[in-house]
Image 1 (spheres, rainbow, N blue to C red):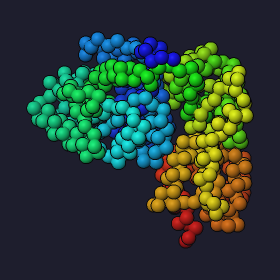
Image 2: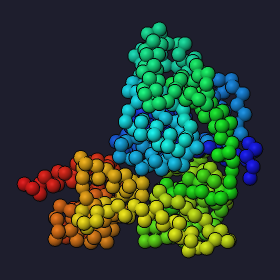
Image 3: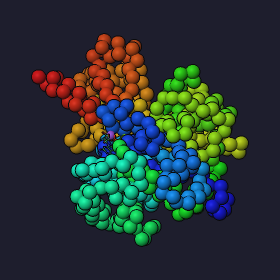
Image 4: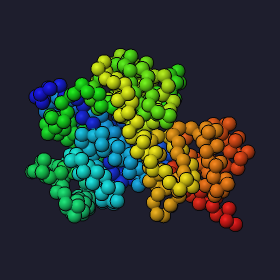
Length: 457
Ligand code: GTP
Ligand code: MG
Ligand code: NA
C-alpha cells in the first residue's frame, strides 16, 4: 500500500505523566464525563480508551477559527496510570500509541514519572505535546470556561501572567535539562524541532480547544507513513471481564486491520492458547470510556484503530495485556497459537526459583506485572512462588497452602483488584491460608507487613 495521505486510520494518542497531574480529568473535560471521580483512591489503575470522531475535535476547536482539514476519521485516546507501580501499563500504553500527550502539573513541574514517561516516548521515537495543566491553580486565576488559552491569558491580571511566565520558564528549563527543547505553542517558531507546550485546565477547560486543534492538525501531516491503514490485524487485549448477557468478554485495542463477527481468533490463556470465534463486536459510544459500563453499539465488522469489546466462547481464562491473533485462511493454527503464548511465558518465568514465596493474583497481565515489579523493589522485597490472573479459586488456595509447612507467612494470597470465590474463602479459612484483597497495590503491602508483624509477636 502506498502512503499517499489517503486511507489513513485514526491515530492512537496516549496520555502519560506523573500521578495526579490530571490525565483522566483532561479526558473527562473533553468527553464531558466524570470517570476520574469514580476511580478507587482517585488513581487510574488500568489502561482506558476513548474514541473521538473527527467532527467532535473540530467542534471543540472551532473558536480558534483554524481551517482544519482532518484526513483521519478520529482519534483513539489511551489513558494510562501515573502511579509509580504501573510502569508496565505505561510501557504498554506507550507501545500502542502513535502520538502522545505528556501532562505536567504547572505547580509541580517535572516529576519522577514525567521523566519515566518521557524516556518511554523517546525510546520509541514517539512525538508528543506537553499539556501544562492546572493553570487555574495560579493564584488569582480568572476562569474563562473552555476558552482558547491566549484569550484566557488576556483576561488575567499582570500578576497572574507574570507567575505563569515564571513557571513556564521553570518547566522549559527542566525539559532542557532532560535534553529537550520545548516552547509554549503560540510562540513556537520551530514546530517539529521544538516540542509544543499547551497550557490547560482540566477543571475549567481553558486551553482544551488548543490541545485538540494541535492533535488534529499535527498528527496526519507528520505521520502519513505510520498512519497509512494496513489490513494486517494488530490487536492487544486490554481487559477480560464479564458483561451481563454476554458472559466473559475482552476489551481490545485494534490498531490495524479489520475484525469480523465469525472470525476465528487466538488469545493467550492461563491454561494455554484459546482458540475461539468472535460472536459479538461492541464499541462504546463515541466520546465514552471503554472502562466504564454503559450502552454499547453492535457491529458486524470494525476497522482499526478502535477500542472494542469482543464476546466469544471460552474467554474466561484469557489474559489481559497480550496480543489477539486472527487465523487467516492460509495460516497454520499451531504457529498462531505459539505466537499468542509468547507474552505469558515471559511473565511466568519471573516467579521465585527457590519455590518459597507468597501467591499473587491480579486482574490482568499488566496489573500482575505491575504487582510483581512492586514486590521486587528493595523497600518491599516479598518473594513470589505462584501467580494467577482473574478471581481467586480453590486451586489457588491449594497452591498457597503448600507454604504452610515451609514458611507460614508465605501461605498468603495477595489479591489485587480481583474477587475471591466463596468456596476459595472457605477453604482458606479451614487451612489457615491468609487472603489479602486490595484495589490499590501498596495497600496489599501494608496489610501483609501488618500481618508479618502479628506473627512475630
Ligand atoms: P493518575 O491516573 O492516578 O496518575 O492521575 P491523573 O493524572 O489521571 O490525575 P486525575 O485526573 O486523577 O486528577 C488528579 C487530581 O487533580 C484530581 O483531584 C483532579 O480533580 C485534580 N485536577 C486535575 N486537573 C486539574 C486542573 O486542571 N485544575 C485543578 N485545579 N485540579 C485538577
Ligand atoms: Mg488517571
Ligand atoms: Na489521579
